[in-house]
Length: 409
Image (tube, rainbow, N blue to C red; front, side, top):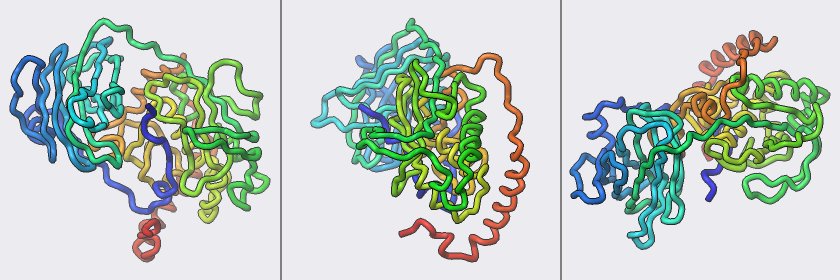
């Protein structure tokens, strides 16, 4: 079963109101029990009373095998259960017990001691969550919430921990950027799309004749984003697709509501041969911003790095400076973004964080002899322009009701 749809929408990037990140609860025992609801029962023991989160009830105790039960209704409600400590190589398995008719599908996640996401899955009676710990953690938490658009309901899970498994090895990922034409390219099980080779004019009339500059800026932005990690980024301008396993990011076509789309969120990059598409013609809507070719290349490169992040197992976050963000404005997207340790988007889970650098390090590994690339020649110019835009935005947004509610319909 595929995980959540991996998209970056225009509505998110062209909004002028930036969302606030949720406050994270510190890992204090009393606060955790009161606010988040930690409860459990072993398979052979009576239920242990506990405090419960809003609309929820449940139970859990650190054990080789235990049972978690509860009931959740409504979007945004969740339960968090402390499962105890865990060593590297521990396999955590969460099985949906078919005792309800029908059992409610729920989003189930595992967090480490810092409340950083380890694994996410929609768990049903036939679709378990399984995760091998890459590192030891003094605490592991299990979270449950209704899926997006789901009603929720009662749930019961069997949670099993078995030690001694091999920690999955990191694997280098090769990525090919296709600026050439495409024929019946399928992404995320959508119908195949065809498109012409990349041309700057697809982004707006102001970029006619600037194709090479923009492509170079896209490639540079992506290579800088992944410079610390063992990700090899090649371009169709350099040659044909590589012979070995690789993922492809296509640049072409348009979509009425999306800037980019990836096959799925591939936790820990289990499939090295997936696709993503950047809907180049959709960026023409941003022609009114009068970005320089390098800035437009930065914007497209940020979206491409975002979609590649999904193929490497990263989810959406809530920080305009983060590559996986979904809340920033189009101006934020035109600036340099980085992978960070930031709060999760509520559509992923209503609590917790994503440690993107840590997950990438555990998935593809660090690049041998990591060298931080020198800043691009236009970095200082872009920084000055970003400062001017921020100042102008603060002055203008309160003078224009249309700007304040640009995406309200």
